[in-house]
Every structure is written in C-alpha cells, then in structure tokens.
Image 1 (cartoon, rainbow, N blue to C red):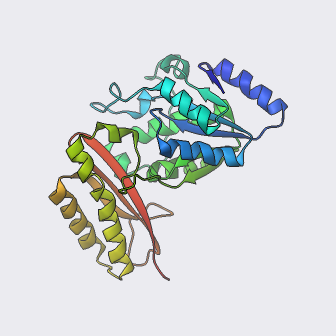
Image 2 (cartoon, rainbow, N blue to C red):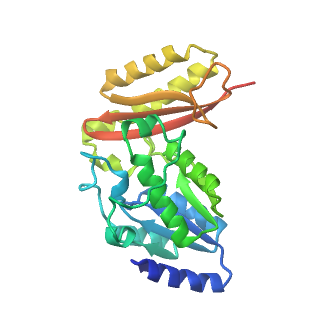
Length: 284
C-alpha cells in the first residue's frame, strides 16, 4: 500500500493502475478510522481491483464553533488499518493541496432540495462543503465506484444527486451502518463521549426502533409520534437537534401514504452530536 499527499502523486499512481486496466474504487473519509470505515473499504475491495482511500479533514464543511480543530487526526493508525483491509492507495492531502488558493474564493457545489433541513438546517453551509470536496475527489481520482456510509443518510442523498445532476461517470454506493454490540452507530465522534454518556448513547437507536415498531403497528399520527420520540430522548439525557420522518427516496416529509420512511435523528449528549437513522418499509 502506498500513501501520497499531492494531486500529482495521486494521478501518477492512478495512471499505472489504469494502464493495467484496473477497476478503481474510492472511499472518501476524514480519518480516525473505525470498523464502519473498514466495511466501506471491504465493499470497494469486493467490487474493484484498486481501492483508493482519501483521508482529509475538510475545513469547508465545518461551521463556526464546530470541532474542526479538535477532530482526531490519526494517520499512522489509519494506515495500519487500511493496509490490513487491503487498500491499495491512501491519498492524504493537506488543506493547501486541496485549496491552493484558499477557501474564501473557491468554487462551491450546491445541491438544492435534498441538502435543506435536517443536518443542512442545523449546519448551514455544511453540505456545500461536502459536495465541493467530494466533487473534487471524484474528479481527482475518477473512480468507477465510490462508497459512502448510510449513517450519513442525507449526505449520501446529496452526493447521489450531485453525481447524477453533474453527469459524473461514477457509481455511488451506500454501505449499511455498522453498529456496536449495544446498537450505537459507529462514529469517529463517539470517542468524545465520557463513560456515563456512552451508556446513554445506545438509546438513540432504541428510540428509532420504537418509532419503527409503532409505524409497523399502524400508527399514522406522525407529528405525535415525532413529539413522543423527542420527549423520550430528552428524558434520558439527550438534547435533540432534529428527529423527523421523511420519504426515504425524496427526503420530503413523510405522510400517511409514504411506504418507505426514513427515521432520521441527530441529538447531543453533552457537546457530542450523534446522528442515526433507520429505514421503515410499510406494507402497501
């Protein structure tokens, strides 16, 4: 496995792979890798001949007072994990490599509709930063497929729409959420939780499961279901950012007629923001 830091080095390595007619996969990450990231690499490994993993903490997607400066940067540990997972190339650029003329005047990619509300509502500009850096990575690597985790459900929808609307020749694939034994979705930010908060954290997923059970049982009073779930989260110590029921295909608000509902939540435990989701398919 090779690690490169500049676009020129990246393209040189990819040119050799293409000369050998290798099918290329890309897994974009911000590093501090866990088993969920490794599952993305394994999915790419199964479907391609040459797997590129990018590691870049993208300042353009962080807002004021967010955790850009404290976000864990663990390149050496990440390299060991990626070697074991069978990655072929690590692309770990600096901010100056990605934004050589700075970020203030940099062209940004904006994806309307699906980026609005939910995480887009509470983190203004976040998805512009995500769409911009992902479009740059897709152009730099020009992969056949790119793999993203389904935990970031809205992000995946944004990237799929961007790739479709811009006619990018890449297949965007989603990988299922990887969870700890107690149900907590794996996240690099879980390391911010103290021991007491870590005991509470699985109740976010449990609340989504309770919502799914109630929907499956035939409850159709969606606003009341949402308020009850928010109250449960508050009762056990969360500060909900949002909890909503959306059409899984369009991300528009769900109605009694929606057959596939995405149950989406973000909530704070102390200063740690956790997100999770669960798809609920209802009978026709």
